[in-house]
Image 1: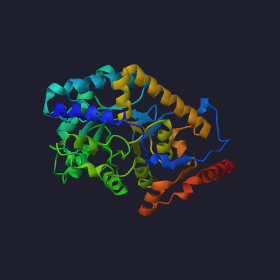
Image 2: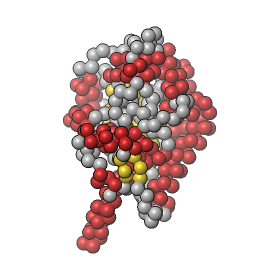
Image 3: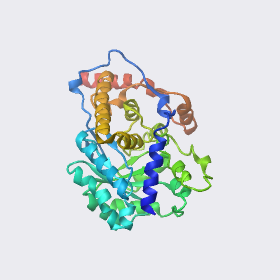
Image 4: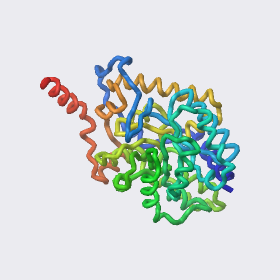
Length: 363
């Protein structure tokens, strides 16, 4: 049953991303253009560091699949693309392996095809410490993702209905594994309150994974005979909203959910993310065009990221947090209701310049 469900997930997710592009709240974020801000491209680096983790680029192939013969082949292709482009990669949930060791190779193929890459194992919040260690050991994983998916489980016909012990289990796993733990949503967003709670648990990094990308409530509803949860289609917060909500929490955050192009990556970084993750679009690309198509797409994104950072005057991904951005539309309305000030973002480069001029003068 798990294998069939994984195949359904891939099929429905790919179908979602073959539909015409929809608005998401990244469209409410725009850069203020400063025509003389540009620098030399030779001085730009895509490397990013956060929570004890170092990546050569601020982009990853995020958690998607595994657990069946078909999805094992998808994981193989994704791992090859990650190897050839140097981007980090995450498996889908490894619960299938924990339930049946015969599924091990559908996940282990990632390490076999990408022996030196940064690979993240992925489990749900019901896992024990022993299970978390098994997942990390199978992949020789560099980090462990724990996904939060209460809404998906609620809509899933065979899903969990007990969520009260998720927090204690996450805290135990953080203490019980030897790799960084990244807690992520699956497309409904992490609120400020959730991020602060995760920080108290000792979680090093959070992936806000807001709505706007693959919609697992819709996927699970499509699997129901009556499709009676259609009204949850817009549940949750967008990735852009979550990033603004996260300001000042002190926990490094990643941006996934609704990332459609290099500009969305830049928007996420400018709003405080350390890196961005992409799932559905990369899945559709590898299914439709194979490994060469995905390698070409990712390589193109990395090239464009470097070019756009050059034009914006950002030497590193972190420097994008000093670029002026405008927050408008529905995203601005969300911020007003949550008490988040956004006007300062439109002129923050001035403060940054004054600080650096003061430091230079003091020297």
